[in-house]
Image 1 (cartoon, rainbow, N blue to C red):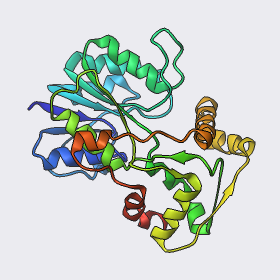
Image 2: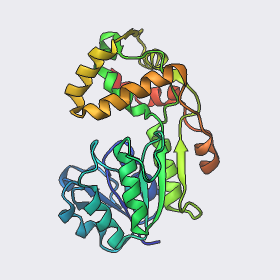
Image 3: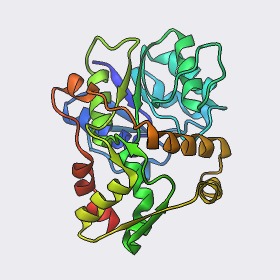
Length: 279
């Protein structure tokens, strides 16, 4: 099997993809901004490069057959030259997208993931899109509040089917190393729904302390998140999503189990895995 390039190789998902491929004895190349700071398995080829600077990607893409693409940030303005560079070298791309309401090919995309999916489709590469729902790891954003015993956040009744980043990586690894996935768009979720308030309770149980939920008014949340994320459009999308999950809970799919032959990891398991991060 030819080389697989993993972008975002030190990130929450990418580091697990790199490790799982390396453990399987598959040649893997990791794209990182600073190789001196990367902590990856010894048998992984680490190459410097930056997706926001397409001119730096040539060494990483040389002799690569497949690419696991994770896009940094919230915008797709610089994505076109990156996708073109990938298509120049690679036969196949597995893109970590998102499960959002789909827009037709002639409609205006509602989120940057859709823009990048369209760019990929136009290249002629073989592609597979992974479309997770909510990431369990995003609840690490509550860590400081968990330590204080109260989490203030909007829409505590929003019901999510959060997925463990290890499951996203396991699906990516499976798709990268097996056939039959060309043109597939896999919606992947955790195996259960929990409201955001229930997620906080589960994390509290994992760390051994009682944590209380307090609803933050949406207007206050809009200001706080815009200051933190810097993208008003993405904030609006997030707030609309959380609001919608109050009355229409996030879907639960069996994709992880169908592809991997085992149940998806639960949020309780995720919380136990990350308990130290909240202490």
